[in-house]
Image (cartoon, rainbow, N blue to C red; front, side, top):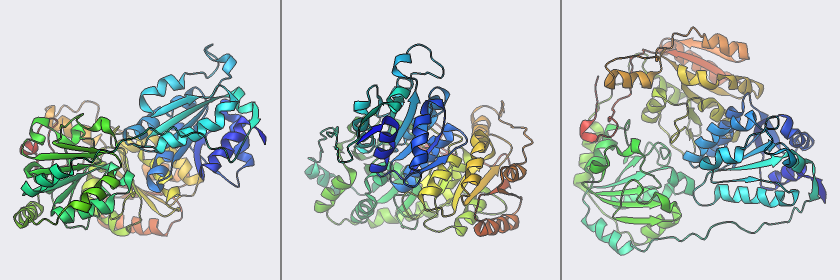
Length: 553
């Protein structure tokens, strides 16, 4: 059946199982938007306030649903506005297909109106990108894009479609299956005998689990590995939901702002199982110290990560779930009672202040009590993000949406919108700061127009809190441009957008606001006023080790 390129795109998106697409229209994608209009009973489009917000929404949707997020933007500024969102998805290995329009092929390279080389611009931050210059290649290209986004280590793929290709006609075959572009991937699990010898020697095993565990669906295998080894589990930020918070050997997040018990157990272990992690500098600190006391096993789907930051004694690459299953087939039951007693001592050594008064910890724990195990939680980036990692108790995977690798302020609201839609429009929580929220607060318009049940908790301390913390500790209290001095009334702003806005200075006011939010069908913003010198502790200074940990002050 002959169709124009725009309809071929829409039909193939539906064929790929796409139910929701996020985007913003413009001249170079009008053909596509016309076809989306005609197919609105089969595919839903969510209009954002800005293309960056649309990209973050597609990212959040992908993380919460396990499906591929799709975002659409016009040429020129529409395309360039996607760049931060694409980079964010790339560094956090999120499957996304970004579709951009462009000027006609005959106008390329002539500085035509709203023309940019988005393929060249995004080359370093995508798994692959395409410019479709011929209508004959369009359907095949779309199929390849979805396959690449989900093959191996997941990530974003961009398709740039010139306007004349959208208008041209070609045969669409709903039964066509393009030749697979999957790379032949070897799985290396040949070191099982050596691994078993290391396990026999080990007295203090520790599992460091990351986002690769969630991506491969290996949560049950990691739990069983922990039980079989009698091993404590520490988590990267991306892996935080891979093990239930209630599991006794889950010590929480590792790294610069990790939990005390997790940091200490990792620093004292003699066997480190690193599963689905890339050993980010924020997680390792001083690399000379990081694995100096332990044997190291690194398991990851991306062979390029093996030995990149840490040189392991044993490495295995391939699908994490499959590799763990092979290990569990031969792994004996181990017992380490002395190590478990030591872990309990680390857990009982409380270095963080209890949840008293109107503190960040008290706020997060109260919000946690109002949710359940299925509540999707998004964060922006900064102190509130680290407090959420420390104090919110996640019981299920894919319930945390946060920017790990890129650290994108302004990520949270778009991600919360996408996550809420993916989670069946159940009440979704966003923890943000006044600095981060100011980046992309225009997406409040999207939350309101979509009537999404979002609870937006603004940790308002009138400063860029994390940067101020660093200025306090490392820069002699030189608070250069981190005191915001803004007069923004966030509750009034929320009301102006059409949402509910509430201010909270006490726990009683917060509880009342949360009760109101629970009864509301739409977005509710709660402006929580906290002290500007609240700090995220513990903290390991950059490039240092656990023995340099700051726990007070």
